[in-house]
Image (cartoon, rainbow, N blue to C red; front, side):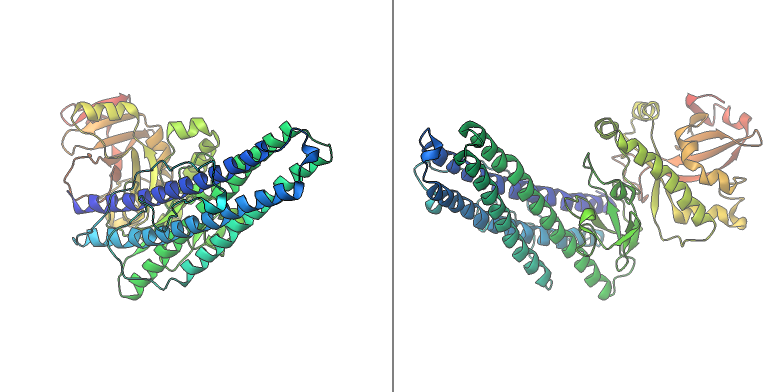
Length: 487
């Protein structure tokens, strides 16, 4: 397999590990919360039908004991998840770099979720033997033992998680006690109170607990990756950068989606919603930008092949499930046009950043498949370094002959709405033909990457060249085959 493909797979594998760590930790926390909820409901069921005759203080003590049990054990589970996240963050940097150098990595398979035993009904919470994440059979091992970073930040996250899960537990105790008090004072019947308590435990408490876990495990992952990249740069590694990758959540932050594909130097901050953020869930960023954030910052080298060379386009399903993504996609197109313009004007330095300017339409995909070519990805990208070529007058006779800057700035529109798309029989590339202001024709040439290709080309489906084109040339069936549209 092509080394660059292995790099892309290593990056994907690191993200998959983070998702697996989330899933396993969430499963542990939910299991503990379910056990706690069951125990409290059993205690409620023991009470007499006239709740006013309860020994209220005893019942509150039982509730607190159950939730204290949950707070302590869930804190240990969450702290262990943070350690796994920290190690996975280190590996997310080390593995792609090792693969790019041709060095072996010793990866472990992702763990399978296992069904946990139910809490015995005869045992109070204090005596229940529930395996902690410090030694469960499905504990995640993220790979080869790595040189340890100074982990004082991890220790702080573990301490915060332990404390925060106890806070979640204490807040649930207060909320449940309020519901019990309403029954005793006659302001609520016992059935409604039982329903409210169950909702507090299985909805509100669960949501808050999982939000804390998701945020802090992700923070540990991002912190470790950032520290590792800084360590690599300090050791003399050149060319290493980082790229913001959106979470893919349906209800994501628009500012985070717009930052997708942004590449900066390791020591620099991303600009997200007009604010500098070093990495997703940066503790120095406002909480509104970090809580429940699912984005990642991935290691990036200009010569690496990436699954998504620029930003990751929204799928039709994503847009259907959240129409707001269409507005984000339109904003991205405006951002790409501005990025192209500032690059061509020399207002920003070309640093190997790629941007997505469009996607392959299904007629083109069907045409390629009929030729036995399975596209490696759907998006079409452009590199800022490639963009600089037409800006140099001496290069115009070689690349982008005759195209003006405003035509390049409007590149996305030419890709999304061309007059026609042709297959170049000699160069085996896609030729997007568009109308020019002078009534002539221009074209953008897209190099297609096949999924099984062993080519050493760096990226999938990218604009390699373009320029003016004569109608008679395009109509020459010895050179071009029409895929869609007409001129």
